[in-house]
Image 1 (cartoon, rainbow, N blue to C red):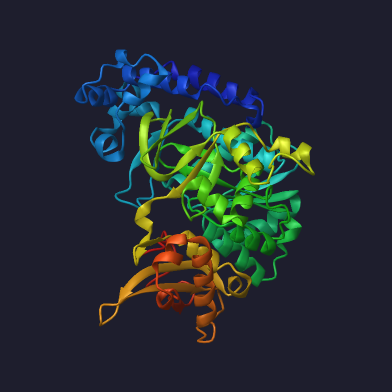
Image 2 (image 1 turned 60 degrees about the vertical axis):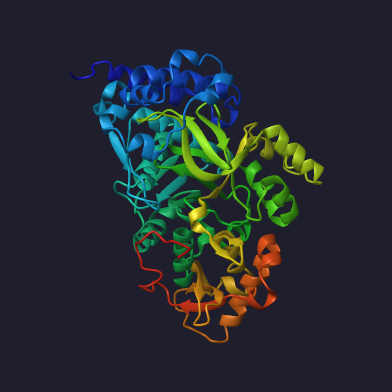
Length: 499
């Protein structure tokens, strides 16, 4: 039977979004209560979740207060999404209530289908609004948004384009172009349309966006004339990377010129960088000791703010859970990303204890615009992307910084493959295969420069590496490969940094 009430729900939901004040003023309290209410709604409307709770012997009526919420069993892809038919995961068992599907990248397994409706896009569009309003001032500037994510069924491109169009419909002077991950078409679009706008926003994965900027520089593109801004997602990057790409793209306000999103096909965007979170992260990047104290790790994670009313985070054994509404609503969903949460007040207190106040100083008015009183979530990613060497966990994020030092960064793309090799005597050695920038060729004299730069940053950032790995083994074996090498860096394939 056709859902005849759906048009009225959609109209009311979109009207509420278009009339809402900018995201920066959204309330930050009530997250636990909203998660509890969503639990009861899902338990009464979603067939798969009803069956799941019965299997776990949980009566939803016993979950009455926020403190009871921790008794609700965790969901993940294996115990929930892959066990039930797709319609049963939706409210009323109706897949036709969702008008699009997104597919996960499959980086840790088989790609997964996630249905959603246009109303689900509102929550994610609010996160984009926070970036475009607070960081880029798109309410005051004519903006060309260039979608550099792959188009098609994967979540990045189509979802991002839809959210940007919602902002345009809300009144922002945003025009959307969708060249996808085609460097030639991106450069053509920017060159032809860019002069008609006050700023051009490139939205894509960090390594690919850097490739676009580098390709343009190689052809004499004056990026600064376009007022370039960046929206990034999918990978952790360093503040050195932000500075390097910022210089090449003619950007001079690192806390306002770019923003990273913490997103997933499972539920869209969960959080986003703000000027405040970037200021905090840049401070922590300059003080590895403070970063280790706060995060309990030598790595510098992605650090974003989130609205707990729409995406409620919890932690479980050093990993993240979230509760949020979507085409497939998820309650205490174990995303398996390593990370944690920090309240707004605790983050400011911690920074001030270490001699840094992220909401004081010059430009205070601008800082208030980009400093919402929202909690923080930090994300390392998943441990399957590490290698172990002499008992030390070595993370791609540590190596990345070594490739962004001034003596190296201009000659490499930033992509690499980290491995531990074993020689004939069964001795283990750290190995890094590095992709050279376009036009660069293998240079034996450059190899020790790259190796020394990686070693320097590993010693600075990774205390396990510094203390566990004998000095004779601390310098990695570096191999240089040309751009697009088919064995290690095949074009068009999602890159993996470890083997």
